[in-house]
Length: 183
Image 1 (cartoon, rainbow, N blue to C red):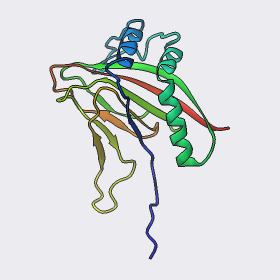
Image 2: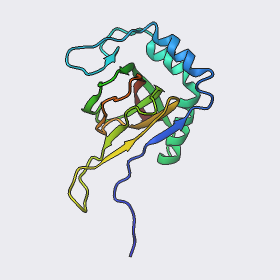
Image 3: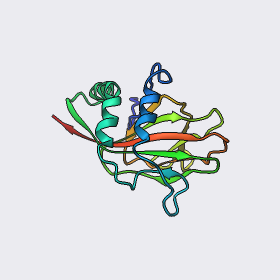
């Protein structure tokens, strides 16, 4: 009997070496130019709905090494040479009690999250499996704890959320969407 997976959904994670020493400060300085606010019914602060000229380019320059590594990792999965383009960048801050409801970003492309701060007692990222368990029929989540200096990238169609921040410290992330195409 042959056993194999019917579906495979990739996820990429990376811990940025020496994040606290260099990159974190550059990102925090960048964010000073793109202030966040609460919008309507959102349960967090963000600059996603704001005018953020040059944010995408400036952010991409800071994480250019990580984007190159991601492109190489995607090549290993797809065995195809690809173009990877960051198309939208935003930041989100979660104070005590703040959370993000289940959502996705697009039917195509990739979504990335760079954790600037996530306290030890801060919330997990929950990624919803796009189909119910074949064994139990129940909805399943992959719940992952990331710390500051972590990057996670996954297909944009995956529904995801963050649990309420029960910490007295803030959780701060930068999110971005990318298009991917064959060369």
